Length: 77
Image (cartoon, rainbow, N blue to C red; front, side, top):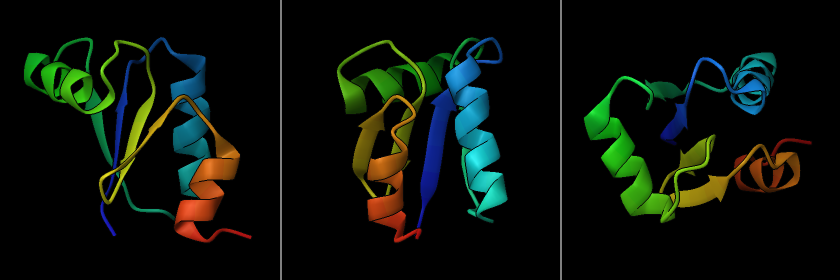
């Protein structure tokens, strides 16, 4: 399973999402869209918006830190 998070360093929900992944030992790729224009464009293409975090789990897009959706997709109980 491929997990990507598009985030910024100043976003508290981004930090919470990454901490949640770490807590559940979810391996993920982090893309800082504040400095990485290519990642920012990719995030906008996937989510159709500028808000962060945007989480991509095997092509399933979650905008914001939505634990219920993350848990369902990753089967976290």
